[in-house]
Image (cartoon, rainbow, N blue to C red; front, side):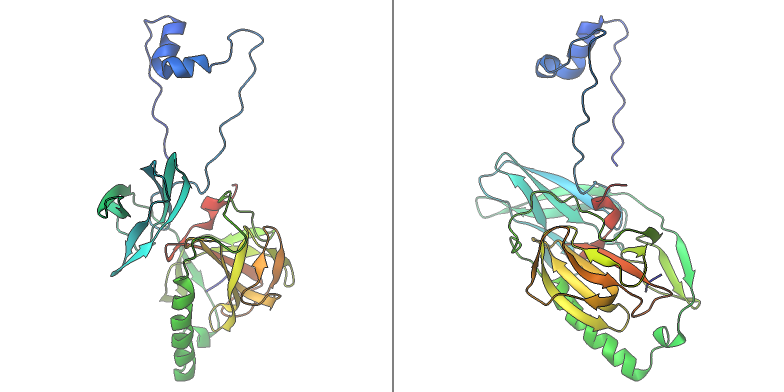
Length: 308
């Protein structure tokens, strides 16, 4: 270990004939698209799943419709005392803001701010639902919980550097515009620790788990889940060997506790390209990958971006 929307119920018109009920449900356009009834009718394939999954809870993702516009709208979310840019996907027909919700967010009303063509702004609201995460107790080396003055100073330097990395916002990644936000799992293995767990190290509460842990043997190759650019490579006190990738518009991914890092800052990776290996460096209880996903400078649940 390391340091859906519910569909609305179907409308029922028990007194109407079948043809009329279907028209009431779907309208003329939907009715024209229906397959023929009868023995020869074949099941229609399910509509493609939209990635990431929308789950408006602390640590989740909100997908907010921004409507049509000739150019990509500029949207911002409030994080602490600052407004930070939000990822916007789509085209001139329909744009969507993909908003990361902090684990610290309180349930209730929230909004993002969108710039308008006349130079003003408008708010797009959403509601954060409550979510209770489990608690996990871990035993680790005492020196990684009760820091010496030297280790505390190192941690603070690294924290400041990581804050600069996490502020990265590139309009488009070096590999070109993203065609999909569906990610592939970066390494095969058992998911040994889930996002959002309340961590207690040696009896002392610490920050919730901000990523997904995947158990795998030291040296197992890790691949890029999407095209991206390497924006940080380092060896950190808590995270051990670490690489950050930039996928564009504030969508970043982090890989920690690595045994080797086979890239340099500025390298551009294809989706599925191996770039580092699983290890047990930093504050750990065994070899695994700690994988983090960040949107608008907040860590969100990686499980929302991958198949179940």
